[in-house]
Length: 234
Image (cartoon, rainbow, N blue to C red; front, side, top):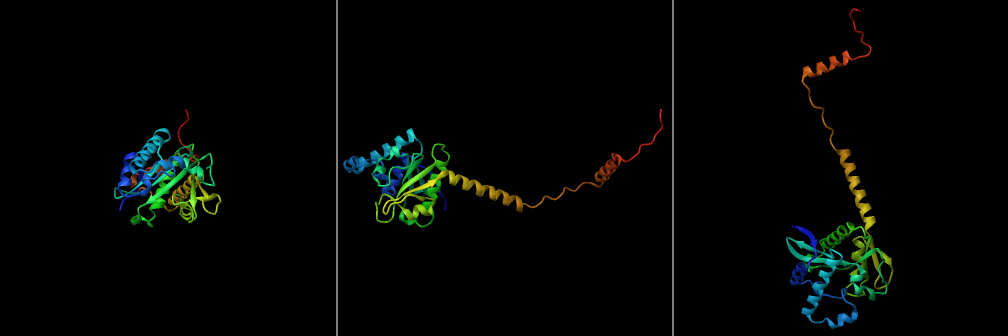
C-alpha cells in the first residue's frame, strides 16, 4: 500500500468532495459568521471554496496537503495565515501569534482512520512549512470534546507534536514550533550518521604484489638518514 501527501489544488479539492470528505466544502474557517449565513447552497459553497484556495495559492502559496492511498484521495489537511482565515477570530483564545499560520482542519475518511494517516498529514504540513523562512510555527484552535465540531481534537494535536499555548476549558489554542521540530530532526539525522560511522565495517587493506612490497622496503632503507654513502672524493 502506497501512502503519500501532495499539495492541495482546486482539482484535488473537487476530487476530495467526490470521495465524500465533508470538510472539502465547508466554509467555517474561510468566511466570517455573517457571510457564512448567506452561503447555504452547495454549489455556492463549492465555488467559494475553490475561489479561496485559488486566492491563497496565488498570494501566499500551498495551503494544504492531500493524502493519497494507492493514488486515491482519502484525506486532507488545511492551513493558511490568519489573514485568510476570518473564521478563527471567533474563538475566545484568538488571535494566533504573529509568527504562526493557522491549522484549520485535518480529515481522513473513516475506513482509513487509526492507521497513522492523520500523523502523516501533519508531518507533510510541517515539512512544507519548515521550508518557508517566514513561518516559525503552526497554531490550531482545539476542542476538548465539548467544543465546535470544526475544531480538531486536543488529544490528536497533542499526539502529533502540538502543545497548549493558551489554555481554555473548551477551545485551547495549541502550537507546534517548527524551529524546535527542525532542530530535533537535525539532531536525529546527525545521531544516525554518527551511529552509521561507528558500525561501518573497517576496510581491509588492498593486497599488493610481493615485488612491490620488496621494492617499498628497499626504498625505505635507501632513504634512511642514518645510512652512509660510500665513494671517492674529487
